[in-house]
Image (tube, rainbow, N blue to C red; front, side, top):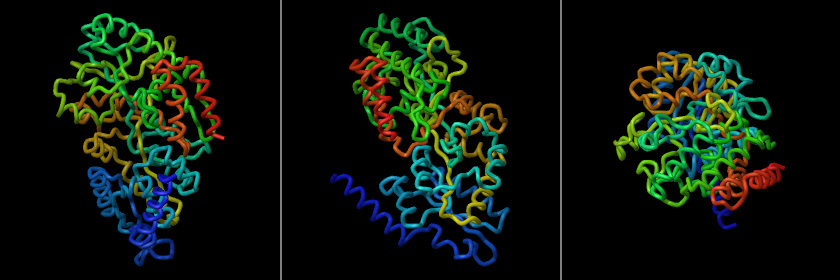
Length: 443
């Protein structure tokens, strides 16, 4: 109760401060469609609180303004007070929201769309041109919300992959990672026979932690692969695939039974060789280059899509998308909304702009053609470990479109995944308990 009161006070204070000193809609324009004298439309763009991304959007805005003197784009970073989400909510409450912002995940967008704070992008003239010119028809499809609208334009998409210690696999007689559950279990048995308690297949304390976001990097990766990309929760409906979900939990339970899981705290278990299998995002490689130069792609480690249940074609594997995108706020005038779409259409009409983004941020652009478009070839040739991420952007599934995603994902861990990891519940019972709790929470 005390925490809730403190949080409410912080939001209230943030709203007052933002109302007093905002650089949003209210101070940037006049009362006639937010088009100032001379016919110039001013839009406010809140970039992610990351210097590299802010600099990128400032450069794009400057270049666009050089071609269109009827639009002025003010780019600034989203304040983290205490989080970027809280700052956006406070700005909306204070009626000082920007025209558009990036750094929005699908769950938070659901919260904003529920309160009618966002414009359905598919209702704006020119939005379909953005999709086609950027070659992202397949990538954006799973972003469609339960009401049939698109509220977020994904900017980047990290198709989460699993890393394998290739050096250890070779010691066990394998030249490539296993692709199915039975193959993974075979590797686990050989690993334990050779190393006993010195090595584990999956060494990660997060496996036993119910924190909501951690399910994106274990349960969801496996579930997306097993279910063919089933959305699990769509809007306010539980749409989970029981067969796929039970197979995932049974796979994890079998790894536990083979003593292949280590869920206690260990320092950098994959990097130090205690574990040979873990989730890896493309942001990891900068750290590895600095701290673990011995980790070299296709030498000491390799990357793969999540393994699948026996009987499923591994080539059809899906995975979780660690991804964020751009939204346009409903409080913006029609002129600002259209100016925002026109700006984004201009940015994404040239693949060179996405290539610049990729090179500077290491975040894979949300495009179907990332692995085949010549604009990205120099980047992928220079960093071959990024190629499997590029290839699988269209195979990655974004987070659920429900405003209560934090509570819902906590239930996955508390009722099923964490308990299975600890051997406290049978897989089928875990799925049933989780499903019942989720359906109750969704009412």
